[in-house]
Image 1 (tube, rainbow, N blue to C red):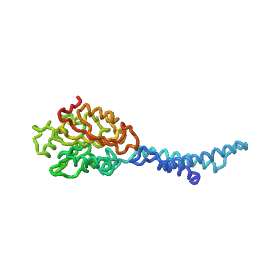
Image 2: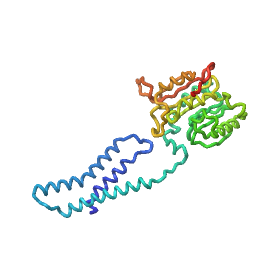
Image 3: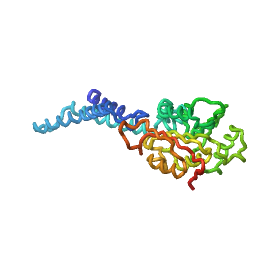
Image 4: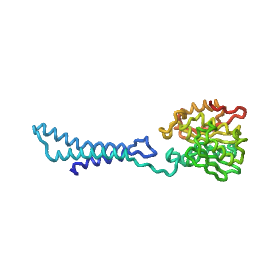
Length: 320
């Protein structure tokens, strides 16, 4: 019985391993996984092929019975199928709760690492800093576990505010972490908004009653966040705190990320974002496409690093 079940057991285990996608490559099939699926299918079909050939041989010879070996072969195959069903059902019902080292890993995975961010924006940040276009108050919205704005060199009196829904409220000499849903930026009546505003004002040593609507930020950074939020609300809401002449730095790929968490009002195409910035009186200064293939002209769905400047004369209009 055990010997007759060996091909089925091997096939089931191979199929189980082949169907487990790597957490950072969920949508990739790959050559190795393809070979594994083919081998699993062959092993699973082998007992049926042997059984079918045996039945065909008996019928062609006019024999009405089968041998004990063939009975054991079929019984072993059916046993494996039964235990496979029980195993899969148990794995589904008693699925273990995954453990995470930090809340960002739980919410967004490990795809947005510091190495990739440095590759994408390091040159842009250095250029803006050398040209004196970043100022001394950088607000990083959707900062994540590794804020991209930390790539900026330190400067006298430069301060950073990191805003993230999975963050923690903590403060140091030149950095303030704020736990806040970015979409709440246009809802000042919420308790979470009021708490965040008080913490920021303490950090900046200003009076929240006198400075609630004062434009203070010199640069806003949105890195890999626009797919997950109502980008119109978030960008325009934070832009109301940006000084005239301040910069907005966008790092985004309209199709990259965890699609199950994409917002219906998230950014779908770069062309839509260009029109939105024009409506908000934010002038595009530069557009870089670090991952676009050579010779490719289409940019609507490409990874983009964009820098826009808040118009000196016209104010940003928040959507109603």
